[in-house]
Each structure stands twice: as C-alpha cells, then as structure tokens.
Image (cartoon, rainbow, N blue to C red):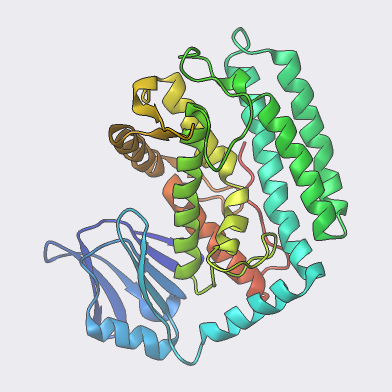
Length: 343
C-alpha cells in the first residue's frame, strides 16, 4: 500500500478492501494488513483482482471518494464515483481547456518541457556512464541544443509554434539515438524514426514500448476521472486517446526509450526476436513480445524519488501520479501542471 496526494494505492494483487465503520481495511489472505480513515482519502486506486466490499463501494460513492480498479498489469477495469463530488465537473473543465487553444497551449508546454528535458538527460547520462564508447562531443552538442529549446517552449504562444519546437527537438534527439546502441550493432541499427509500419528492429521495439506506455497513461487518466480521448496538445480525433498521448510525451524517453536501449545493450532482446513481414514491416515475435513485457513489468517495480512529491515510488506509478497532478491542476488545486523531470 502507498498513500500519495490523499490517494491510497493498493499494489498487492491479493489484497481485498472492506469497510469497518469509517475505516478502509486492507486484507490479504483474510489477515488484516492496514487501516486508513476513509475521511482522509480523496481516492483509492486498487491494482488487484480481489476487489472491494459492496459496503466500501457504497461508502465511497456517498462520500465522493474515487474508487478505481485496475488489473495488476495496469489495465483499467472500472471506477466508482460519488455524486456530490461529480467527476463531471472535472471533465467539463477538461473540455473547456481543450476547446481553448491558449489554455491547451499552456498545458501542452508542460508536457513538452518534460519531454525535451528528459530526452536531454538521456544523452547526458550516456556521456557520463560510457564516455569511452559514445561520441561525447556530438551528444553534448545535441544536449545543448535541447537545453536551448526549453525557453523557446516556455515562450511558445500557440500550439502550432509549440509543435514546431517539439518537432525540431525530437528530430535532433533521434538523429543521435543510434549512438546510444552499444551492443548488437549488426542487428540493431537506427537511422530514423519509422512508425506505421516500423521498418527496423529498433523502431519495432520503440513502437511496442510506446503502445504499452500509452495504454498505461490512458488507464491512469481513466482512474482519476479524466477523459483520455480529449487532449490538449494532441487534438481530438475519433478513436484516438489524445490526452493519453499528451501525458506520455514527458515519459517517452525515461520510460520507453531507456528500456528499449537496456533490452538491446544487455542482450535481453536479440535480432532473432524480430521478424520482417512481406510489406517490409519489422515486428517482434511472440517470444520477443513476451520477453519485453516481462522486462517492462520488472522495470515498473523499480523505485525512484518523484521529483515533485519528493517521495519514493515504483516507476509503474509514475503515470498515475502525473494523472493525479493533472487532475489537481484542472481543479485549481495547483497553479501550473508539474511535468515529470528526471535526472
């Protein structure tokens, strides 16, 4: 169990939640593990199939405590929301921001600031950890260019201008990404980002990782009562979870790209785990996906100190914490959305 921002995270898959008077009780194998006063909680996010008692669900509904259920792997299942608090008000504010280009740009700046900042530190860490194996001057130059883009992001007055700066920064970052591949050079070479379809093994891994990250961001947004389909930076489009794509921008490099590089450089994934289709697309094999998913789940259990909260949390909770912070900003509890800055 972990309590952040007045939200209780239940991470042990076997845990069952019940109500004792005005107290949330967490059980495991019929043994009591912990108690939390219900009136102190704003939300409960349960990553367990065991579920919760009808009494607790009813109490949460009456008191306006968000109770959301997820599969242990992070897939959103269901949510109970109280009437008097009404997540409809939160979503109405989300829709107002989405309809206002100036407000959308303000939120979009946070997502892109996090993205470019984190991409820069991916390069800086490579020069620090592997100075004999990477072109330090080249990576340092690109890092400086990304640093110079940060004030331009802050000064962007429109979404078009913001997207232009982001596109330029992404191009610079991916132009040197191949230098971060230190092993298996014969099977993993990166010449540029290709999406639909991925045209090499590195792009196949990146696309799969981004798909997993987008799914987790959508689940996190669902869990706090936001609509994952209505975004600020990515404009609404039928069938596209635009706000999930917004939220994942700042996490692409530190969550997805780092894991892809680790899988290649540690030889967790090898060229045999990728196969080329008749149309030229390169996809992971069933075994490759299984290996990558297992590594993804292990990485989510590793811990870090959250840069805004100052608390130690698993990596797997980062999308959920950022979704909570976004919801709090939309409600007016925070003046500005705090992006995830990793270093």
